[in-house]
Length: 267
Image (cartoon, rainbow, N blue to C red; front, side):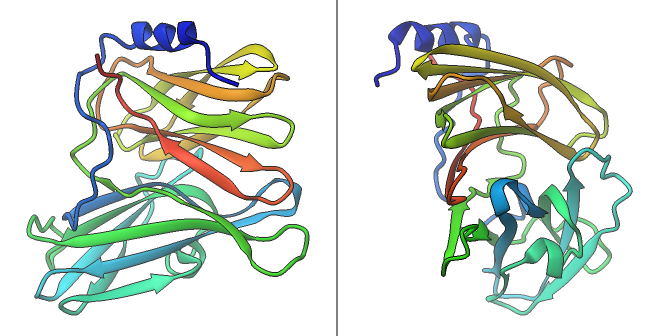
């Protein structure tokens, strides 16, 4: 079913004051600091268990130390110990359960990868390339896995907007809709999430969440209607900063999923 034009108009009108930038993701070879906004080592609904596969590559022709910062869900991450990995020139590392094996953490959280010097200070010459995949064994016990890729974000290049939107998701009895926010700042920020579901009827769900310093928070959007989802995330604290939002639709039977990052609206 096609999404009514009036809902698109509503979203664009609500976000007309956001900074006007090009937020389509353009692949980059490498950067000194990279964020994966949501990763995990946690049980999901209906028999799923989600882990995150991470692949880190040092594209620099020199040794590189990388600091790993864990931003957990629902807990301020400021005091979380920093882990480091050392890479030879043009070398890489991969783990199918990076959160559990490397960070030795459970639950959901973001990961901030930072190229650093041997003394721990940021290294602006770092050339890191990071990819991620969230996956689960099939909950029906069959062979194989179900997964979704999650884009890496270059630190410092996010739009400093207090309002961001997400299109392309779905919610129904078959698909649950999760919406999350990452707060990399040193203070708590409050966000309002508004989800419009259009298909078999029209349903609007609104919730407000507090996201603690250097942490993430993810909620499941309730409601009864089935159809496409348009999600609006507003930073009620009024601090634009470099926060990130996302939405994922997850198949309740297989665990298959897809996701989109939130972006600032454009004219």
